Image 1 (tube, rainbow, N blue to C red):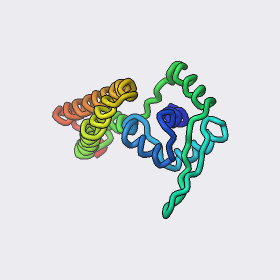
Image 2: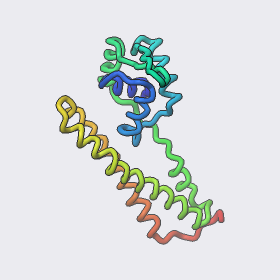
Image 3: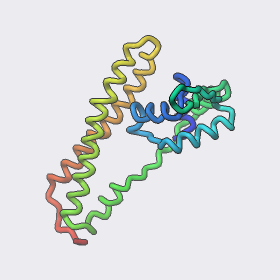
Image 4: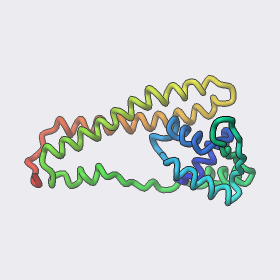
Length: 185
């Protein structure tokens, strides 16, 4: 996925600062795409150089000035072009699965500990999706002009929840299963 295109999509809703965009990541698409604040600012600078966004400085009394980014017609065209092209092939890189693959090189205790950590991470992710993200989408689904977007946001929420549930179930089955004696230990 392209960070500039994710930013274009978010800024397309309304002009935003880099900090606003980081907050939007944390409250919306964080569970399937994330970016650090330095990555966001670096990318916004390049997007402005490319003519995809413009920025204005808003001076605030008693606070630092804010740079607010807005999508240009060129940026909107680029975003629409990107949306229309076939999706990139997902690149699966999962360090936990590499550890599982080499599980026989760990002691049973290490293997079990790794599975429990992964299980707990996904339980936390599922809880966050249900407690933090679902209510936000529910709220926006009732607002004029946002209901259509909220439907699609809900689709990504459903995928995230199903993925977390699958990993939770998979880890649970492995933790309950009897494994052969392991080496490595």
